[in-house]
Amino acid sequence: SLVCAALVLLLATTTTLARSQVEFQVDDMNADPTQEEYGTLYIQGEGTLVVQYDRAKVHVQINCRSVGINTASLAQNQNHETVNAFMLALEDELGLSKDKNVKMDGLRLNPTREYNSEKKKHLVIGYSATVSLNIDVSTEDKKLIPQIYALASRFEAETTEVNVHGANPYVSDQKKKENFVKLFENTMEDAYFKAELYAKGCKRTLGPVMVMSDRPISVQNQPRPQPRGAPKMMMARGGGDMAYAADSASVEMEMPFGEGQKLSKTVHLQFRLD
Image 1 (cartoon, rainbow, N blue to C red):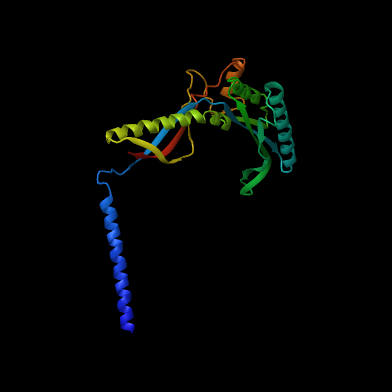
Image 2 (cartoon, one colour):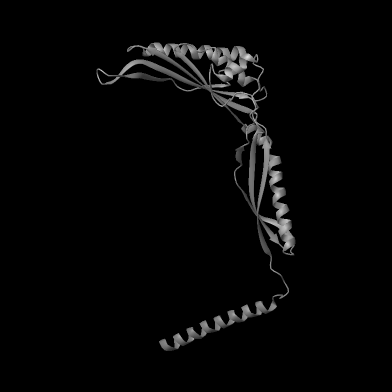
């Protein structure tokens, strides 16, 4: 009886497989041999847009020194007074608010050491108190940054140094957002130009976009022009070339920022080819 049951099961299985193969063959025979399959075209679209700078960051470092073993508080107090006076001048004379335009790093207080040949070791001879200010300004007034240089030179003293470390222009997030539509249009125009060109070369018809993805916007600074005969402005002491130029020209000198930032966008599109 077991042998008979096994033979019945094998016969049923064989019949099922035979029926599947027949159905598959029938479906395959009913297929239209002239029907063309859809193709797929992968395109990378690239768009660029140069946006003029609308903001710049100026880094100012104020350092005050004291002489003596127990003079740490003296250097700290002198630095505190100088920083407050400088920020007050920024607001009163240049209209730069310490709340909106200026960010201050914490105070750095370090001992000043000098090697003593008799004791054969470095001894503390004073202290140095340093505060860094990051000033964020609009580029609309190109005379503003030279005015900051000139203002810094007034706070130079025997034990006080005010260093201005250039100006770094940039495009604000708000302006990037305002120009995103144009950048995206440039990117898609490039993608469709390539897609239509390749589809035509393959003698196919360009179908709809099936899949789309993109990459974040990349930013590249454009070269900054340097006027002939003008002093270098990348870094200067408060009483250095930049401050001298600003004073001698009655602070009429303008800061060249360059063309702006080059924004780049990339999209990946998957087209259907008919």
